[in-house]
Length: 121
Length: 116
Image (cartoon, rainbow over all chains, first blue to last red):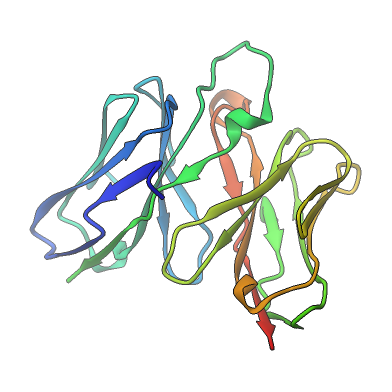
């Protein structure tokens, strides 16, 4: 659990609030991910960053805004959320995904943080 | 058709038995396959990955991959009550631009209960 940390662990916010989730990885990885996990649903990939560049936005509403200032830190800025956005938000990291390099399955292995349990009132 | 399918269970096995968890996937281009365990209220933790056809063993866990049938499974030998959790199957790709660039697709998970 100490390889990828997330803060806060729990967050309750109103629909008009603005808050941010923080993720930090200490594994020397260069790819970072945000996932949403709702009850009885599979993990939903939200965003992918590789070497600080956003490489995937999985049709996420604009009320979720990611930021990746460096390869170790990832933020998710939240504003005007809806009650249906209540979920467990998970951050993960993996080794770099250099284009054109030899494929190594180890680079796809993702390590998760403990998650932030978000409740939107 | 879902990209990664798992039987949601719950799967109930007695202590000491072999638990068998199954997963099918739709993308024939997938290269690596992962099993994660998730306890209630916790985040997923990696059990093991496999990328070659056949079996891969790690302690009490054995992953089996059959790419022709697009099927991957996880066997847990000598199941213990502490193995009770949700088991997630994940498959790499497709990512942006049709590559497997940094993306895992997860199944909905199978709930396993090991009873004493």
